[in-house]
Image (cartoon, rainbow, N blue to C red):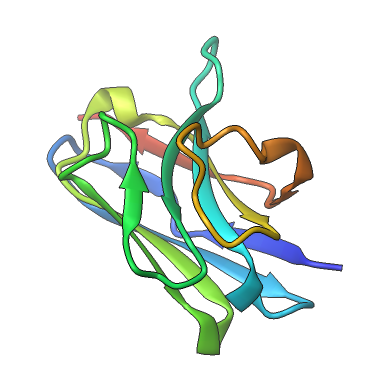
Length: 127
């Protein structure tokens, strides 16, 4: 059974950077599409970025495009989310998911019900 553990969250000042990691155990991640979600207090969960099994490109939400970069290292069974130029509105719990499909859907939440989820890592952007 695939298990995911996120790390790398923390508190950072506006304009700062964080790199989140998602370490998988169990099956190899190379047959799973990886999607990062986030949920802020009182708000709905939203897709942040997705990377398909070929790692050919990342798919981003409007708010993350140009600031965040999703990547994966199948040899390490790990996925990453590099977040730059962080803003207070990026404050949320960030979740890594892995879905046994080969591509990223237009709606990043389309396959979430079939995904394996990590426990989340808190990101706080505040001065």
